[in-house]
Length: 347
Image (cartoon, rainbow, N blue to C red; front, side):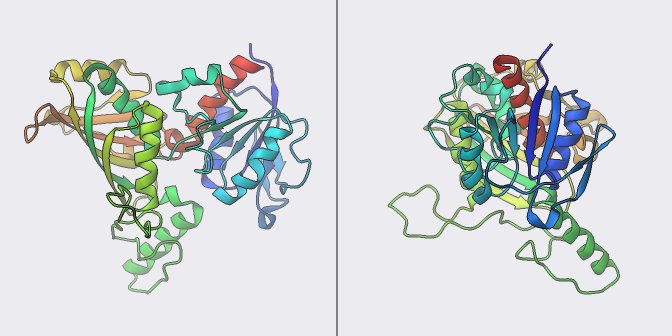
């Protein structure tokens, strides 16, 4: 049995932070004590955990003393300032921000894909990937291993919970306003999100560009997808292009994947490989209209894959549709899975 340890959550009042606390209970994570950190406006706010109340604290010098493992789900700026301090205090850190994902000294981990890298980390800092990258790499992993991947074309359809609690509130208010014919402001998103799709997640990259710069015209979310997928799969030259779209749903991200494989495949073998991949659930029966949907996937840990079919426009082309709960496998669950490996190896 794993040793019970002292755990902290930075960003405990956010959507992912709350999901972390819920998953600690659900998965019986060996936490002897939980310390909740939040912004100054949430200082003293109480959160429920195992039938008790956690009072939120603010980050300050020395706050990570006697803490074994810290989960960060805060802004990049917060992580850049406080993650090194937590590691220097002796804690292991699992960081969900983008701050250290591309640092060659920091493992970027999806446990079902490259969890073995945690056997010999260079630092006590571990990064979790973008909310679409984690589920997508779980799907790509068996395809890459068995048939190779020449190119990936990806479109993501991302719920507002990926932008946080305020974004969810904005969708609610705008939906009610639209239906009652009352106007409402857009504060989180650049355009109204209710009954709308916005083909922009993150800021557009601005110049100056180098000749042939593959990030020209793409958003920060799309660039993250490209670079993080390459790192996790260990394929620095992987050809991948993405369009990221914000859609007016509260939970779950959908992804349309078009994969050009290096070698010929049989669809029966593709389905078998996907079924055998840890973390995946197959929902693929056109006769009964069975395919992945957010209304069924909310609250589930697995990544659901379906609409599996050939793309006859290219040689060895494959189309897939995947859906995952972005607050779980896209963030909190992936982080806790990393934490569980760390506890098993180092405590």
